Image 1 (cartoon, rainbow, N blue to C red):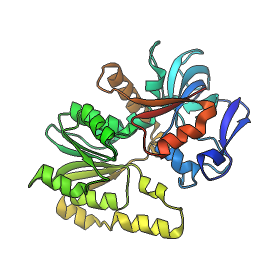
Image 2: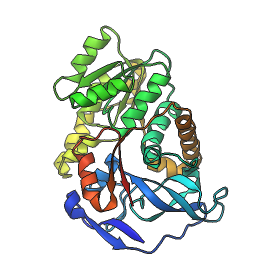
Image 3: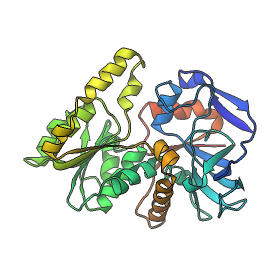
Image 4: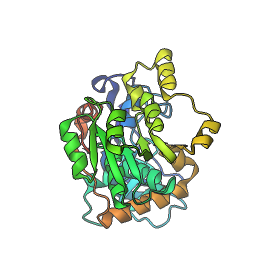
Length: 340
């Protein structure tokens, strides 16, 4: 089979090679999928640059989600037949013509499902759903801040929060993204490039404070955000994209760490605040039943029209470097998809 292999850390033009690799053999609990489409996530950018600790040793194949047809199923992976159209949450390996996934991270799609939209439902929408509907409870009237709200996870979080009846504030970097956020239902949109988002929050909230923050940026962004939480407030962190702008050295690590600030349980207790970290790879590895519940709920609400992914662009597999550049340049709105 053909696979897109990361052979070295570096730019999108230098890091990838197309190689012929053996087709994977599904282990017990795994499904082998003939891939038609796979999705890109910001974690892919960090992994390609050598800034993602979970990445396998080089050379390796990236990719967290695939759409395609079932080729075969391993022992215990019941309920799937050859030819079934499925979405699979992969533990790397998605940038290939065939990929394996734990059956509890695979959901059967109705024939005619938009495959490009479906790629967004694994990593991005599952991260959002697990964050907003499993790890915390959103309540009607909650004041919710979504950072990077025009991205794939951000889009999902805005949709979920509005479905729950929350007042939603989104941040983004460009005027067209601000309009997009509002079109998704956000009540307020802040351009963090031209405005200090904390000052804008004070203007929007008045004497009130935030109930929920969703933060994929980390560093000083996290520190500023947690200071805007009120009593009972929760900040959910699911990334550190600020890290991707660094050279990965020791000083950059220290800068990122100090940017987060120092937290102590007593301080959280006294102010009645909570910090929650989300890593869907860990959930898939250690709590696959949670992942199964999440991906099934996401697909159910997609079918009901509650969740509506936006496809930014679709690239041919030969243009993988251009697809990466699209995500890395932060110009994308919604999901970037690659097809074989």
